[in-house]
Image (cartoon, rainbow, N blue to C red):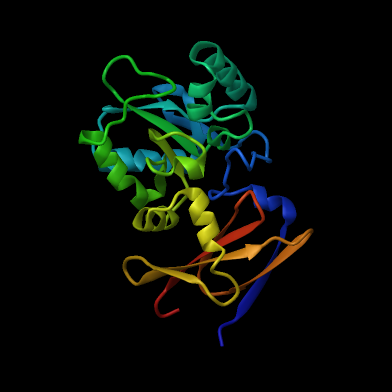
Length: 256
């Protein structure tokens, strides 16, 4: 029998992690994001969390973007999101704003895990940058899930996400979650619900490369501390879902 180790998580930790769901129903609870860095040194005002920014650069290098893709909007403070929402109401009206601009404290941009990207082709629309389904942009879109990014607001998912189709908006959720969501065509909302089928001894298994596989499962949060029991073999990562529990991801080798 494999040795096990136990950990305990505070209830507040459900509001932290790469898989937190932030939308109209579930506001951001953690306040201002930390560990922010420029996505591109030449554009110091566009920020993301350090890990997400590093991974984004890996994708751009992998596809040899060479400046063809521009980071348009990353992290926003609550104050910046409030100002953007009010300005869009004034300039674009309520119908447009409700489709494309999230309410303050309900925006993924406040997590530091979201990025709007644009094709570098002259003047760029800050709210709706051009990021077509062809050329270098499509190359990015296809490669991104292998590194942990998803196209967050896909066509056909509007009623689920509450946001209009946004080809330019990408969210870092981490690998292998990004690939699973892409493989079965799930929005983040759907994926969070999907993972609740995997708990206790029933885990989702995802086969990686070189004999590595991942076990993924959901643990509902207790009112105070949540105990989680893990086999000692393997590296693990735990994310809150910003709703009601935790998503545990464990990396293992076949002979562990």
